[in-house]
Amino acid sequence: MSEPAAILCPYCGHTQPLAPACGECRGRFDAWSLQATQNDMGPWFVRNAARPHFVGCSYATLLALVRAGEVGRDTVVRGPSTRQFWTVARRAAGLAHLFGRCHACQGPVTIESPVCGACGAAPHDATDRSHFGIGPIETVVPPQSQPVDPLALVKTAFAPEGDMFFVRVTPLPPPERSVVRVQPPAPVAVDPPAPAPAQVAAVSSAPSAPVAPSVADPVRTERVTSPAIDRGLSERVRDLTRLNRMLLVATILVSASALILGGAYVILRDARSSELAEARAKAIAEVRAEFERAEPVTKSGAVQLPAEPPSPPTTARPPEAPRR
Image (spheres, rainbow, N blue to C red):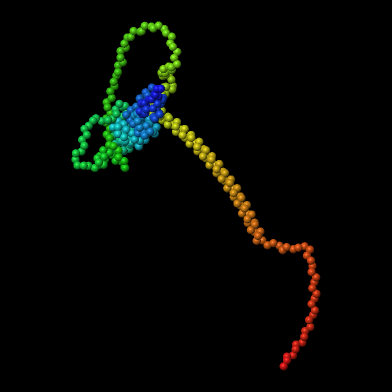
């Protein structure tokens, strides 16, 4: 049993089973996508932890990312004007003026007049795709003097800005552009082959080779003209739209549940208040009934007792004389 076929992604170098697109960077493996990515390649890199091994982009693609808001003034980038050292975009020549900053002194500049009025620094022309920005090899001579604080040596090569240090970079002048004209080879006359006897081709179940699409095909044309980064942005927009829809549905369900629970709580609270009020009134009535005076109880048909006879009159005796 043969082993499953594998493919090495030409964009990020990820090895994976044979598939139409990369599972890491989502780059497609067809010839049109490869050519579209090749057209957008360049010596500029945007630091992305999700795709650390992705290919570089051209200056035009980087400008499109700046206009789309994907690259800001504090985005970590590197390119020809930074000598391929990582730094923030507002300190990269050719990008800083897009954010209203001078790459040398961080003074205010405008896109219409990118030359700095304070230090006179001009933006760097970094549109050449073949110019990587690395300078010529120079002899490195370490200091032979007394031991120096390593942090002091670091501060001599970096520019402080608040609590941050950025590398001091002087962009190299762009190389002179030359046009190389390639002459097509002269056609060689080839005698037509002799016609072979006609043979009946056997019917085979193997799939036929893919036919190259015509230029008029709208799907293929869009794939050729659409850069790989734009396709990645479109996929991100679709993912964010799907996520926003899910969040909207979840918010609606949570709001409806909260309204239902709130209504049930209000109904139960009113019923409980009514029960408490009735119980309180009943208890008050019982307590008051215990302290109220009741009328005397009389029995009907009581027996009449006879009247008592009058007492006889008493006679008064004369007082006796005192004895001697």
